[in-house]
Image (cartoon, rainbow, N blue to C red; front, side, top):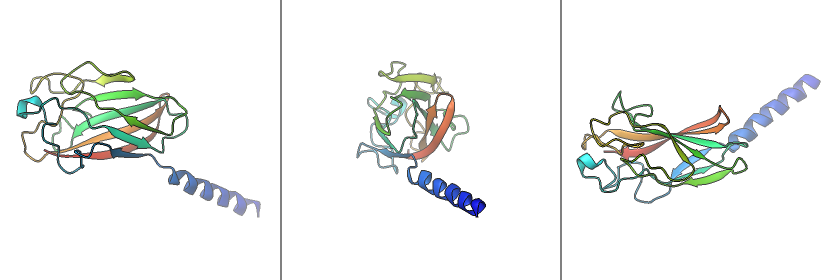
Length: 166
């Protein structure tokens, strides 16, 4: 009997933690996850003051003190897996939701709470910086951001959000 009760508690606990999964959504209505908004592509292809999309992150696991953002181009081997820039955003470990502000493309100047992990991987293709906006020249490449919540050095969740195609 004790064994069955313990199993039930473990199963119930697993379901309750799944209910509070981390969710990431685009905040600005211009970003629809389908198409990169006009002007938000790299300067090489006509972008005007391009920026990362503002993100809402909810269901943040307890104790999270850092959110890692990895910007990627799924259709470019070099620019996939964080190739468009990786940065972190520090948060108060008591928060369960946060809105992450936009970061300017083509710049190493980051707003408060942000730190660069890795600059974008193609400074010879377009202007260097912590973040390179979508830059495929309208070839239909799929851009996304991987959002990881961290408690110290431990990853507590990972969510992929589609930014759109360009």
